Length: 494
Image (cartoon, helix red, strand yellow):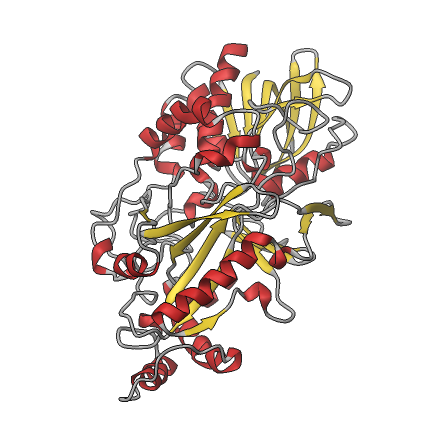
């Protein structure tokens, strides 16, 4: 009998396992496999081969397409930490205004998470040109970022995405998961949960190998913490709807966290979008929405992953003529044209991509996405007019303002182009926290509401799916802080 079975090893599951393992018998199960340095795919062909499918159940990543949206996600021990840039940022306090837990109450748990993740600033950030560019474009709004990267081992190769083969990234398998395993937590990778059923002593959980390497088994546990990420948790809870009746809020008010991607292409400024260096700085711009609420638009100095840099350079050189939104001043020496020609043969210093600003957007969208389950039981997020969300319109207007100030060609958010979707890597909500079943699926520590009142004993959801609003920054630190608080409550309850 396990004291707690944790489903998923992302920022929620890894944190819960780490905090419970020193005092409880913990089993953590993860659908993906453990990827070690040297095993991550390289090049576009390698990334394509690592796509998760029925034929490749241990693939590294996958995506799902809904109406107006697309969502990409990771499948690995450590979840998204295996393939992301490790950006670790705390939201602005106004984000929590409508949450059932305040910014003040969460503050110590943010500090606990930071103590484990130990993010650091990029020591070469000032050399990349982004800081100077942002200081000119948005004076006084620059916020430099920290990353969960060991920069003493980082050579700025550009392979943060889709995974560091140099061992420089402090992904969750080196932080929270390492703490959990050192404290005695058992970990089963390439394992999925098929069924959860209540028993007199807690629950019994049916585990299945994704590779068929072992027969299904039933495992008893007093507590179950579902931490499979927004899409994975929605899939699992939908499959268990005959066991657990949920609030009518289930599958509603999903957020894309304002994710977006655009370019200010071929400016007159030296920049570093072609560089493999991790994302190191941003600006946070306040926006008052039509309802009078303040939201945050975060614009990061993005990087094109090394695997896609050559393709991106050539594609942008062509696309810049298609969009024809040029506001750059005329360069008598023909420098802009020569930079574009250089990019047609390969990305590098001196080309147009090296003088482009890649807008990686995170922001507080209005959270109007709706879960839709297909015949296979898998969820997609429908939000047909996501590109018209007020925060996205504000971001588009700001991009044009930047172009007027700095020159270049505006290549707008791909979601605004005909036939395209808005893509996110940070879907939030669907099992949002609330004060009761009328406005949430779980409470502020992840306990699952019964629609008729009370909670399902020993059952928790603790991951990005319970985050009730967009947070306007990459949500990893927020999820870890929420999980720190929930894990503390689990120990007290047990």
